[in-house]
Image (tube, rainbow, N blue to C red):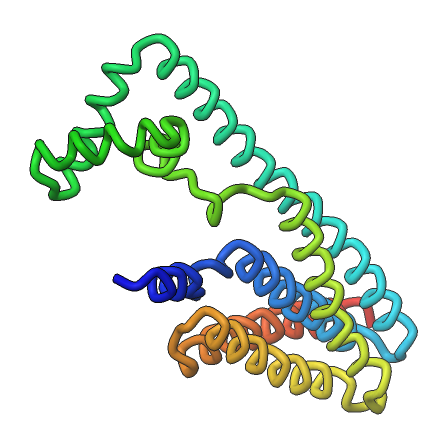
Length: 237
């Protein structure tokens, strides 16, 4: 195989390479739109003015962005700590008994379909090049692509949440008072549909299911909070 062809194939980019940041960004933006829009629709159903709706929206944006950042950081950091502990244990096992670890690696390749002799050769060569890397990838399932990056995930989630939350908040600011709830809901569903389409395209998934699921759950959430706001507003009145 020509060398330039090998390099070209190696440089191919796949949708899975975007999994880490794409998941955090889509989750943050979706949560920002749905939670803020639902909050605004619920408050609008129970209120008679722009003021309470906008205050609730700004508070929801700030609180939600901070919550997303903290939650994502803690979650991903926990995964990073678990990966680090596994790698430390694997390093100790390699230092204690290289032969046993080599046999373990070879057995993994046999289970994946290689002939025992070929599996042994592959294990020997990979161990010679990077023993810990081979065990991390093939035994533990830890790869550079899947490596946990807590700060990156936290920043992506907080930023995308704030951007998503700003959309229904802008709709609430510009909407006429008598149609504020409907305007927020309509604008938010359009934004959710666009987000679903963008996420599906970036992830290489079918377009229609991606759009349908985010709009359905967004509409359900807003309908539920609108009902609560209406009942609460009527009770207070």
